[in-house]
Each structure stands twice: as C-alpha cells, then as structure tokens.
Image (tube, rainbow, N blue to C red; front, side, top):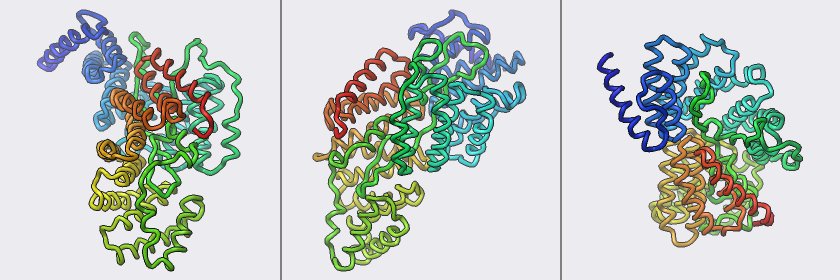
Length: 523
C-alpha cells in the first residue's frame, strides 16, 4: 500500500507539472481529496481524459482511506466518466455498477443521482452490445423519472436519452411516445427556442417521418415559439446530446451528478432508394436535411444494378423487377417484395454465378429492403457478401463498392458493433478518396457520418478532426450556400460547444442559420 501511494504521488507530481503548462494547475502541492478532485475536474474540463482518470483514481484511493462514502461516489463517477470519454466502456462498467450500488445504499433509489447513474450505466452496457442488461435500466429510468426529476430539464434529458435508445432498437412508436412527453418538459424548463428543445423536436419529426405520419410531422414543425432560448440563469442551455459531455466545472458541489459522461450512439436513418446510401445519425442536422432533400439532388453515384435489369430471361424477370422497384420506392409492400428478391437472387446464382456484380446488386436491394424495416441482422450478411463481390469484380476503389460498404458500416452501427462500423467507414473513406467521378459526394457523406458517430460516443477530438475535413468536403460537393453545407456546420457547432468553444460554436451556428434562411426548399 505504501509503495502504491508513493508511486501515485510521483505520478501526481508529473501530472501537476504538466498541467501547469497547459493552464489548469489549481494548486502547487496537492495533498488532499479536495485538491485531487479540483485538479481532476480541471483536467476533465480541458479534455485531458487520461490525466483526469489518473487524478480521479487518486481521489478514489484517498476517499477509501478516509472511509468517506460521499467522496467515494464522486470519485467513482468521475473515474468512470473519464474511461467513457476514452472509449473504454469495459473499464467504466464496474465503476458505474459500484457507484449505483453505493448511491442506492446512501440515498435510496428514488433520487436524481441514482436515475442519472442508471442512464449512464445503461449507455455503457448498450455501447458494448449488452442489451439484456441495458434494457431494464432504461425501463426503470422511465418509471422513476417523472417522480424524481419532475418538470425539469434533467427530466427532459432523461426522457430524450431513453427515446434515443428505443430509436436505436427500432422501436419507433415507443420512441415517439417518449419524445412527445419530453418536448413540453423541455419547453417549460428551457424555452421553445432553446437548442435542446429544438433537437428533441427534430428527433420527433424524424421518428414521424420514418413512421410515415406526415400530418403529425407538419404539426410539430409548425409549433410556434413562445419562450426565450435561455435558461433561468440567463445563459444558453447545453445541447441535449452534449449535456452529458460538458465537463465538470472546478469547484462544483459534493454531488457529482453533473460529471460528464458519453452520450450513446444514435441510430442512422436509411434511404428508401434501391441504391446504397447511409447517413450520419437520426438526430444530426446532416441526416435530417438529407432525408428531406429532393430526389433530383440525390446520390450522384454509379449504380451497376441498373445494368442487369435487361438480362435474360427478360420475359420472366421484367415483371418481378418492376414490382420490386415499386416496393423499394414506396416501402409499403415488404411481404410481397421479399420472396421476389429471393427468387431473383436464386436465378442470379444459377445463371450468373456466385461472383457476378448483378448478383451483388440484388443482394444489396434485398438488404436495403431489410434496412427499411430496421432488420439490421438480416441485412448485414447480404451487404457483407455484396461488398465482397463488388470488391472482386471492380476493386475496392469503385464507387458502387464504396457506397455499399458505407451501408454496411451503417448497419454495424445500428447493431451496436461500433468497432466494425468504424473500420468500414474508414475503409470506405480511404476508397472514396481514390474514386475519380462522384467520390467527393461520398467523402462528404462518410466524413459527416464519422464525425457524428464519434461525437455521440463522446470522442470529441476525433469528432472535431472529422468535421474539419467534412466542412471542406461538403463545400466541394454541394457548395457553400447549400442546405447540406449548413447542416454540416450545424452539427460541427455541437462538437464545438461540447469542447467549451462557445465563440466558435456561435459563429458557426449563425453561419448555418443564415444559409438555412436563404436556401430554397430544393437546394
């Protein structure tokens, strides 16, 4: 124990020395829990997650020596949050579990702190694909939230996070009900024009769009603003998806419920087109604008699927293809479409062979039929096979290979397989940079997807780097007066706010708002 404390003391001296140069040195010779905690909070606020984790660990050891449960709880949550920001959910999980047990024992279950820890632990489970453990925690939060948090912004944020969970799981009706409940709470606590309120409304519109309920969606869009966009303290409130990522201010109270935690990844919305497409997240400005965009300005990509429409035997396949294309467009005849797709795939395999791009096109179409129904597990093997065929036939740097691989990345994202999604997005991006015609559009789309994925995972530095490239790529692909460019700026501003770069964020938000106000509906 003595050797361990000596080692940590030496480590702390290094941390303190380094921190003085980076501008967040709070004390010269820390030697108590309060001083460790102050340094940890400051390191976290500055985005130095590894240093923050080390300092919170010192807090934890000190609080355990002092037998101080309140301090232990704060240290556990801070250390878990730092691990979460480092994308080490497996390390964060036992800390959240211990914090939840301790908070329940100290304060009882019906407290805001316990509800907040439940949400963060559920997000941690979900990010590891452990839905069996995540689901009951989200359910419990729904049961406790109203009585514990009342009509407050924290209640609205809790509802919002649970709603996003159901959106990711494909339970759109349930997600819509919870978002509908969250909206008036946001409006009452933060104001109708507040950015968090608007994000909630945007998510609700997206759910209604995906449920094919345009009348209700229009009503939500037309809700009039009747409140200020500032909170009761007179300052703009944090974004709904970054409120858990905003760093703890040094000198906060003993209750560490505001300790920053990673926001969970969100589901991606999917195109109804028969060609491959992907988006950067159901609640991002980019994906919402992309979904609302007219078909005339849609994907500028090569689609080898069209080349096989005229292949023999045309008399037998013509009617099938006509029906399937209609189904893909309308998304209303799934049961009729599926056996037809499977029949065509069987004919492809017999007449064209297992490695023909025509087969890949039909595999891809069936996969997208499953995607439109949120059957991600059914879509994944079809897209994987399609990518392999396209890569063999055309090479990985062909545009159709890139777009199909991007759809595969989106599918992994919705399955909670985040490392696979990141790998596929990265590979698709590298390949898109080598495509001569149509590649810039895909580069912009992929970079926006990567940026928002990293933002939702709490990887702010990674998100910032992706959006720096995305802004440039989007301008080249769409122009600097387009809605897509404005949507990219709007999403990047959320990252800047989470990084405590308020001035930069406001400038970007103003620029995006000006473009949105000037662009026509078809741009």
